[in-house]
Image (cartoon, one colour):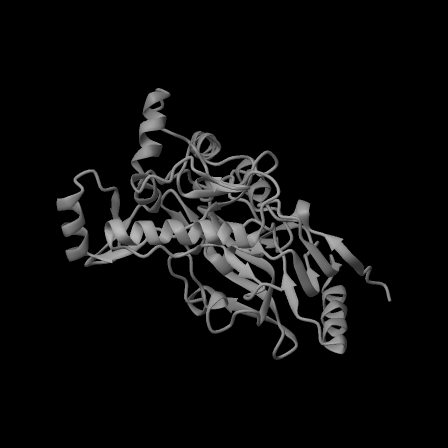
Length: 345
């Protein structure tokens, strides 16, 4: 067998929460043939399969049964171009942030608001990653994926992905069916920064930049994220732990009346998106520690592992926060990172 299969492999350095996780079996295929070989191996042994990207949006148990696959394919290819934009195809195993840096260096714009988001390119469509007024779907063209049901490589276009807020079909009806091998993105050759978020405009204004270039925006986004999110190498975390809840306009108005400083953003007609971090902060959780886990002292939306923590401790803390916010505001917070396995092993 040409595929290297590692047994009892530590994933401590491959999940950003820094949990002491051990995979029963682990592989890193860099070709489609190697990926197929890994999947055949899992079927022959009836192993469950976990696809691991950057390990940044995942809450893992201490023991992962079966097979963990982390794509190791690399490459960014120019597919076609016009006077105004380019289409590039990016391998699923590429690091997302490094890819954003590379596209900017090439003068291909549109991803700068998504700078410093951890994870891989292949994982990005699953979550429809987004930040500071831009979502992946805004630049997405299509993807190629290995269909585990039909056993073939398929192309899935943007309108077939059912993209929504932190959502795609790959999290719902087709969860686990497709392994994203590559992604096509349409990027602009004309600088057109998206400054919908006031915090970006304010930061640029403070720097004396009144006509920002995408490079300015990239650096500003990186600065803001670094100020809010701890470096996983120094303090384990999975980024934003709770989704920003979306409520009906009537509920928002009631909350705004009771809490005049409520932070919210317009969503689809008739709905408002509340800032989960603000709700958690106002409920008194910012900077709190509960054993080996806690709430980051600079951003209440981020739960952290101080070292020695595990999934059960983190979920217990999350449950306390959810109950607290529900009691104070009547709003249910949903956990954003995926949990695997669904039940502790």
